[in-house]
Image (cartoon, rainbow, N blue to C red; front, side, top):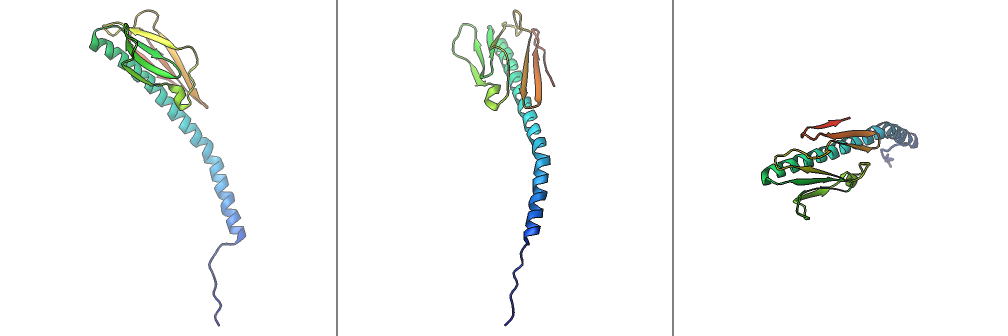
Length: 145
């Protein structure tokens, strides 16, 4: 009677494969986490920049003063005399991004310029990734690392 052999792996081969997989994961996971943090912070910065552009354009289109509210939990655009926002979005904290400081309100005149002391910086961070959104009263916007 012929003896059947079953192809397979030895315990040493399986252990070696697990050690190599563990080393590769140990090297790549921190880099992947840093990449995800950087992408998330960049997206939050772009969302704030988009809210700024939206508020400015809303003031120009409606020909009325508009309030942009920027907080960690929400971003909103509303007309000055109205309580109901025309637009609202989740803030940076919804994606785990930290934005320290109080909730800020920036008022745009009907010609699209910010009024009052509207220069503002919004530092954003998650893990080791950071960005700062810098808004000027004249409508200039910068995102720095």
